[in-house]
Image (cartoon, rainbow, N blue to C red; front, side, top):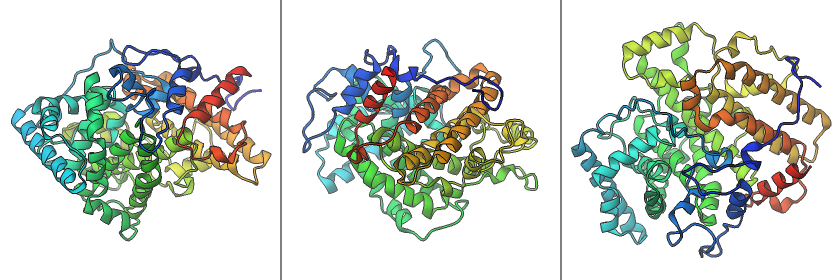
Length: 483
């Protein structure tokens, strides 16, 4: 059997899970042991399982939790020997501004604690959020192991003096948990619930949840954008919690609210209007476009996370995801408008790929134009990772449908093969820097492998749906590896 490029097709393995090898920053062990620990991390009326990480257990066990689940799924890609020039976000070199950020964070935490009686330790919070840590955690967010997640908060426009307090707190916790010292990870756990309340119960955020639906997100104010960014980051933090109640809460409640916000603000149709040759190049317009596109891409990928890790039905329909795919990171990182114009002028000469839902439709259709289509010549790892991740909702719906047909499965298999053709065309052309910056997304073909396993494995037990447990992944991989 051969694919559409004439290359022989073989059954893809899943070495990212079956042959997992821990890095220096992870708890040693094979991935099946990791998944076993995760699968048994169910809370019972709020009591902690003594076999899972907690403040009473060794620090390095915390790496099983409170880490981006995609990184857990694929293994850490961080290259310990690779160094890049790090530029500080605006204002971060000024410790006075960092001190003001400390005051804002402490005031916000105390306010939430006074309303909810969460047992905040003011002295501990003051020590943890001191100005030196403010600087360290934000640097960790932008330039540490969380590099792939920093795509929704752009360093080129970040200013510590003006960033909203909810987003500032979410950034600090994400940086501490995923890029800070090991002891910082455990301490940060104490503040995640307070931060969740601060973000999701903010009256301005609740207004976004229930407001009348808009067809365009062009007119979103920065304060609303930052609330949505904070919500995305807090969900990413809490879905990796060792507490099953927290994971279930964000899946059932917080994420559904976030999807309501995405729909009501028009994020599902976010466009890169800066690319239109009939418009004047504008750096500010570009950054606004990219912020909304990348936020929606993250929201869509969280949906895929719940499908994979919780075996939950998709919340977003692939049909409604009409947002454009993100531009190259190189353009996003440019701070100088004149330098950006040079980059943007070159980008405008390239045809842009279609919006996500149209791209998916073309991959699945009988009218596939092939990898030589000019629209597919300017793809990047980020865009292809988004696309392969959004096959998982389609596969879940196919597996769970009472009307599944062989034609449906065959069409998806052909679309997956076409995606692989695009990947094999793109990857050899990437620079070393592009590969380094992409982090775990360089393992997108492993997500393809898992999609193929799912597509050929029927659902057998209705009770496995939406269990907020990784036990189903564990069993599925054991079964696949034994065949």
